[in-house]
Image (cartoon, rainbow, N blue to C red; front, top):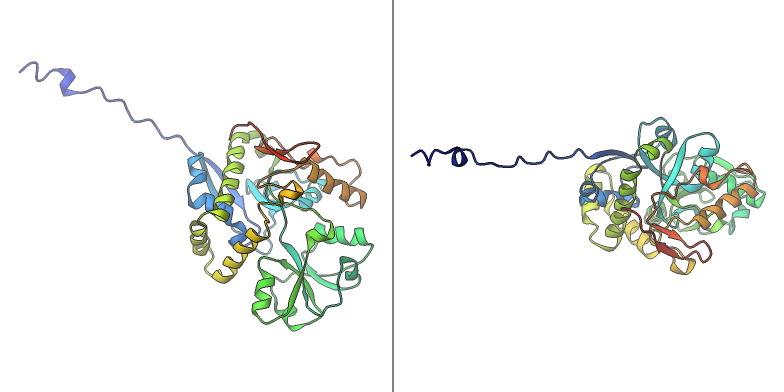
Length: 333
């Protein structure tokens, strides 16, 4: 009886379960309402890539008046997406922003024109009315490079005026608005802003102070975001599609499918290997080339240095300094 009631059997020595470690919170600001052009980030969230890397990521929708740069600069969000040329401009104006990653090698931004419009080249835009975002860096680039003046009409985020006026030109995405306009019966052609010589990338941005204080978490965030993009484009895209649809009830499934296919066929994310591009590659040579263009056109001050607006500290892929070919970098993911 005494043996049966011994302390060893009455109270076995069980190790307490480890206390779960808190996850690092990251607020990610989008530039528009949830759509296919954000798919890689939503895929990483939906499939748990961020969570398994110790990150609690909240994706915040954008829209008209998102004021992304201002939200980042004031700490209302931690990370955002945008165009590299817009970041250069914002940093020159004093905002403490920094590019930490690239998710699209080729920007889908374009001009929508009616098929019979006489404009054939960007120089032909001289004196023409173009609906675009006021202050957009690409507008200043095109004007300075070609010595022209564009009559800028502020964006109203609709296609009604374009569809009703055969002489109207407006900014859009080749993955989105071009498809919608054609479906509405317009005979549309597009001019990619990238073909103007502007080599802007679609980039991931953060606040410099947030980078200093959270570098390991941001390294994991960039790596898992790029993983999400590859899984979204080359795997089963349904997890992202379902999450995006749940957060944007007005999403047109046909537009989503078109955008997804366009990103694949145009290699907007994967890039062109013949141009030494690769998924997630943040090429110092290419960014320096873009900065040099902006300086030559006097859109950026002459002493502006690349490291003022770009940090390569988080990269797991970078370009060789002479050949431009992508190579893996042995850093912690």
